[in-house]
Length: 350
Image (tube, rainbow, N blue to C red; front, side, top):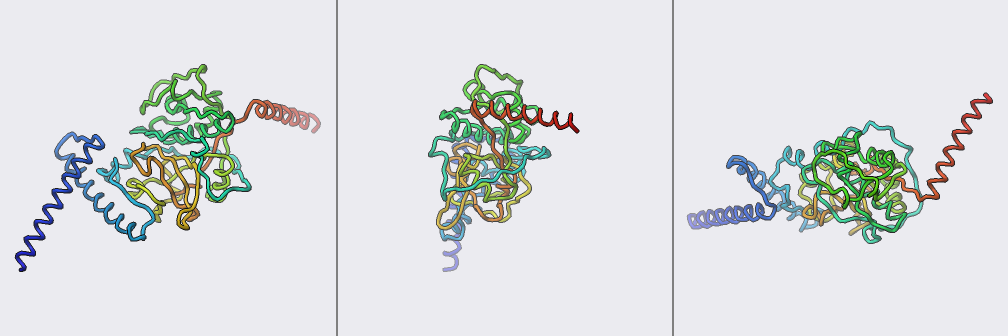
């Protein structure tokens, strides 16, 4: 009887291994994966099997209601911690040493917001192996504000920001606020159609004849204040934010409300776009657009836990661009002139 049990167990184990090997082959085909050597493939295969166990164990807990989100064997499933960092986010955000504007405050907000349903949000894209998350986040916020003013949703050029925003570092990282500053100083940003994304650094080819949007500055939201972020999302539109995306659970996220207690609220490494918020089964969440393509997360989106001590730092570095209409712009310029003249007169009398 014992011998029969052992034999049955070994057969089951072999069958499981064969199934997993077949799954690995199918996964490679799905994501068009290839490796330069047998050694490299074995290394990635080992990572893949480790992640497969993690995904299965985690999803069993999700089935039992213990976890609030599910994982999936996505494009990053063959990567260890270092490979994932070097592929997805390492260096995506440069050090934020710029002087911040005063944080904005708001009043009044609905309990659920989804700006996709209002026409403010362009389709999900893939930054590929270029650390231009900051450019995708910044253009996403600017696209939303431009739609708010004009009623036209125009995809904007990430590549122009990569090539031309010299205060940023192109595919080596950047900051959303510096992108907003660049568009303001440059007096415009091209459309995506006229200056398409190439996922690599290049020479600046800005064309003033194909401007898709302008920017009049930006506003920071009070750092760490999720309530202020909620009010901004409700009243302004999609908001640029920085988060910690370094955890395995974020890498393999599939659906549900992401809740990662080991997420940092200060070590921010990835720029994304908050396009809404809501509550599912009593759990508050942020609706976040990523730039890792449709095969990551919930068709490129993630719901991140809201009102949980600023988890993953989602409210630590939030901002949005200012887009005025012509009347507002003339008024602001007039106010600036009056302010300067007032200062000169005060200086004259004193």
